[in-house]
Image (cartoon, rainbow over all chains, first blue to last red; front, side):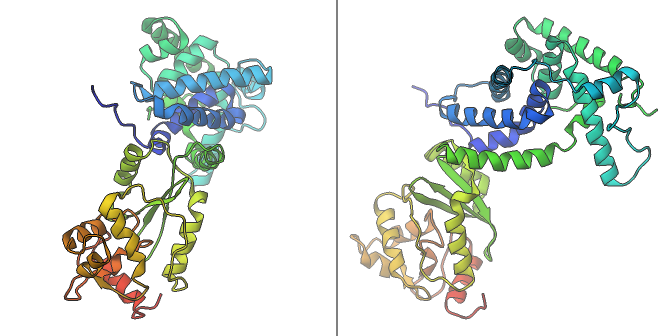
Amino acid sequence: MTPAPTLPPFEFVVEAHGAAVLRVCRALVGVQDADDVWQETFLAALRAYPESAGVRNREAWLVTIARNKATDHHRKAGRLPVPVDHQAVAGLDSGVPAPGVPRPAAGGDDAVVRAVAAGETATVLWAAIGALPPRQREAVVYHHLAGLPHAEAATLMGGNAAAARRAAADGMRSLRAALQGTGFDGKDV
Amino acid sequence: MARLPIELADLAAGEDASLHRLRALLGAAAGAQGLVDVAYRVVDSPVGPLLLAGTEAGLVRVAFEREGHDDVLEFLSAAISPRVLAEPARLDPAARELDEYFAGRRQVFDLPLDFRLATGFRREVLAHLPEIGYGHTASYAGVAALTSSPRAVRAVGTACARNPLPLVVPCHRVVRADGSPGGYVGGADAKSLLLRFEAGRLRP
C-alpha cells in the first residue's frame, strides 16, 4: 500500500494561489463582491482540504470551488451573472473614460499617482472583461488571469481544450477591440 | 502566479493589499468555524523571530528561526493536520507571556500545553524541566536523576535537543556538568543569552 501523499500546510496553498483565485472571483462576480466569494472559496477549500490529497492541479481545484461559490452568489443575489460596470463600459464605448474614471496622468513619476492610475485602469479592464460573452470571459479568466492550461479551463467550462483555446483567443481579441483608443490597450498613445 | 497579458497587467493593481486583508480575515473566520487544526503566528523576540503554533489543546510548538519556520510548518502539517493557518489571535496568550518573560516580568509560564510531539521518555524529561526554577540550572545527569531512568543522561540530552516547546519548557536551564552551557535548539548564543538574562546579568 502506498502511503497517502502528505499535503503542504494550507497556509502555503493560500500563499501560492490566493491572487489567482482573487482574479477569478473579481472576473466572475465583480470587484465589489469578490472579497466575500474569495473568503467562501477558501473556507470551503480548508474544510475539504484534508481529504484532497489526490488532487493533481491545486489551482484548478480552487478555481472550481470559486466558480461554484460565484454561481451560488449570483443565485442568492438574484442578479445577472455578468458583473458590468455600466459607467466604465460607457467610457469604453465612447472611447473616452467615464466620469470618475480619469485617464492615467501621463508621464507622472509619483508612485501614488501611478498606483491610482493603475487602479482606475483596472476598473476599466474589469468592466471590459465583464462585458465579454460568458464563454469568452471564462476562457480568458481561467487561462490568462489564473494561468490554467486550456485543458483545465475546458474541464471547468465544458467542451474540449481546442474550444477553450479558441474562446480565450476570441476573448482577447474582443478585449483588445474594446480597449482600442481608450489608452488602456497597453500601448503608449 | 500567472503572468498577465500586457493589456491586462494593470488588473493586478492593489492586489497585494487586498490579499493581505483577505488573509487576515480568513484566519479569523476559519478559526471561528473550528476549521484550523494548527494555528500559528510569528513574534519578534530578543532571540530572533519565534514561530508559535497551537492546537485546540494548547501551545504545541515554539520554533526558532534557525529551525526553518516553513520546515516546521510542513512537519506540523504532516504530524498533526494539514489545516495549518495563520490565526494570530489564538496565540495571543502565548505571545503575551513571552513578551512578559523577555521584559523580566514573568518567571513561570501559565499556558495550556499540548505535548503530543514528545512521547515516552522525552515527554517524561520535559515534565521535569519546569522543576528547575527561573535563574537556576541543572546538569543533564541531574535531570536524569529525577526520571524513571536515572542513568539515561544522553537521552536527557536528546529530549532537550528535541524539545518542541523551548523557552516555555525551560530546556535552556539544563547545562553540562562543568557548568558550560552545552547545545541548544535555538543555538549556543541564544542559550547563553537566556542564562545570563535569567541570572540578572542582562537588562531586559
